[in-house]
Image 1 (cartoon, helix red, strand yellow):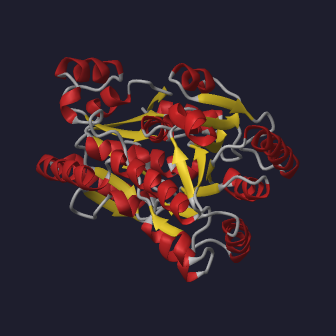
Image 2 (cartoon, helix red, strand yellow):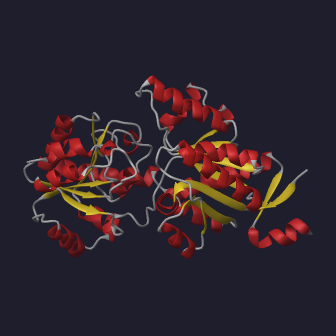
Length: 399
């Protein structure tokens, strides 16, 4: 017997920035499909942006990125109260922390459909055994409470299945994507490119090396600064905000030394299309990635990419096709790769064209949104649920 339920979806993340900057296109696509969508996270400045765009926001005051079991338990209790009061039909959680307690709380609170997106397992097979035991153990437990595990990275799919972290039938390769209509080279006027480069102190013939990401050591900034110090003909420009909640937030001294060595720090930017358009080469020196959005955006903007040979970067960069891969943490290898591309304009051009082709083939976020919606529908059909668009819910469910 089929039961009709209103198509209401709640997305759970740690902070509101993730809802707006990482998931907004997915949320909007779900609204277009007839759903009422709510974002649940810690309160913050992006909540008003979500609300203005038609996405309701519910605050979990205890939600935090800091390592605090007490805060996480309080956030789980706050989530429980919200779910019992609101009773959404779908709860969509996003890892790491909300993906663990959210799946458990969602199922225990009686949410009919619980879906989790694995944006990147927080441990890989290269990590210490204790770290893997903790992360894989939590994932294995939490996955028992979900209906589907949507995994962005194919390497994580292989890890999940090999270690039996989730039932095979629950695991689906989701991929990751960006707005290809927004991120395209023709979006940036040459005058704007020249204006930005001049503001950064880059001469017309200077090769601008662009890095985008939070200012934390895990992003590989210390070795990137070492690799670019004194690199002839190039200047490093970094777009990204500090992250004081993280223990590896770059100290003021590190940034002061980098500025002294010629690094230009832009902080958070809202004009990232223009910023990419003013770069000549993109670099991502991360030690760990899930599926890096900034690298996908750079590829779509036609930039050659130098990245570390880690999960996530390998999905964006095909070595010697649209960029170069180097070992993580190796400043010498990073410098050699950057030096090569700085000195070879023809190679940069060839790789930039290949980046555009790769982005068009693999990084369209419309396909990702369709896979998410298909997952909701498939689970609903399997459970005998008819997802009724909110505009029709009252009349169809009650009579």
